Image: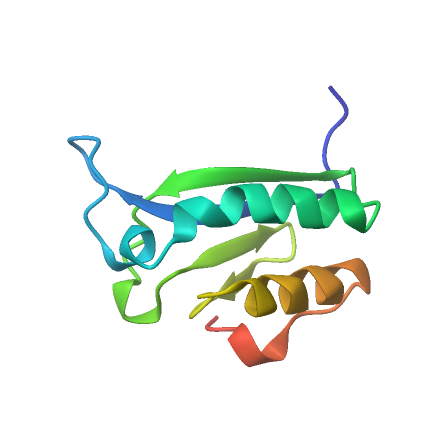
Length: 102
């Protein structure tokens, strides 16, 4: 496998016991995975990996995503419009300022 240019981590709110308990999963972050993969493919961004994570402890900002190696932390990623804005910005080599939390 070739090393990805970017890696997107989506909070799935999993805790030590394995159950999703936080805000991110309750607001649909797990469903973001498929949309992200399709959106990346539609944009020809085959060099981006997407993974679900355990709780990122930023529930006040949920759903939360992180993009590496840029270290963009996004919050309030609640719908497909937000995901599209983030993917479009990433494709242009920029941050989606509207959703940045760190």
